[in-house]
Length: 344
Image 1: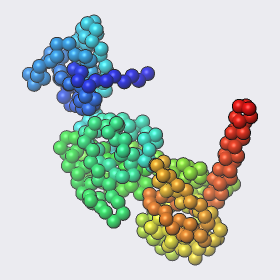
Image 2 (image 1 turned 180 degrees about the vertical axis):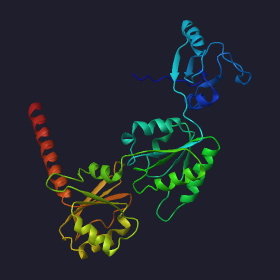
Image 3 (image 1 turned 120 degrees about the vertical axis):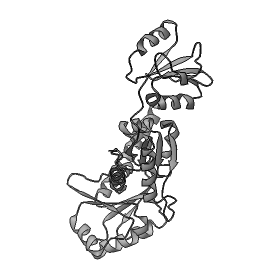
Image 4 (image 1 turned 90 degrees about the horizontal axis):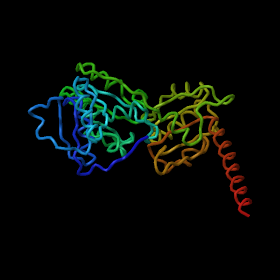
């Protein structure tokens, strides 16, 4: 059971070593509490004045002996004691896959990493709007937009490495998965080169989740037994069009609006049939999500006003989604009819 308490103006004593308690201190300060510190069971000169009777004691598990006797005295006098986890190691980088942009698809490991961060470098495809509720870290926007890169990729890597070398726990929050067109490999290499410990927390890739948000399965029994994921940032070569058209299965293109015309024309030249169904799913899991369905021969006209972020899906699985959508709508109609009859 999770309880919420208004701590605005309340005195909270946080116990535990400075390193282990640093994130707990920030969390309680962010909640509006007046925070005092006790870094050792016997107190330390730098701890400053302590409240005579705090509203709450936040006990950080820092592994030091001697805390339990103090905490038992607090409980015996009626002062609530809240157990807090120790902050994570300092001087390291964690690449976190943020999924397609909704906090509901963040992994448990991602939420924990954000909670433990001292600084978060995030991009616009990650669920950045909710970051203040997920982390008390310093939040730095390093996102790139089409034609506008305020911080270069090398600049992002430099910021991450320098923050870690300065002793901070760094999270690099990226949309989707760091290793699916997320340049995660480059960022890991930069950390390794600088001698900075680094780990990667996988995320839910938009290549699968965004089609799913529109009801499109990337594979389906007796329809498609494979899918290929392609970056849409740059036009494909004729050889790549030929290989894609010959593979069969489902083709998923990420951020492909800018190259949609070349893609559709190239696949047609490579022999893909003009009536191959195709979907453009814009802003998956975000306000204004929209799906445009046409076929390969008409998609450029149908999707003329579509914009990135978008995921393109090419293949007969799009028809599966249309059939399922019709069944779902029919079921909803039956439910509404049954409800009206019961009301009558």
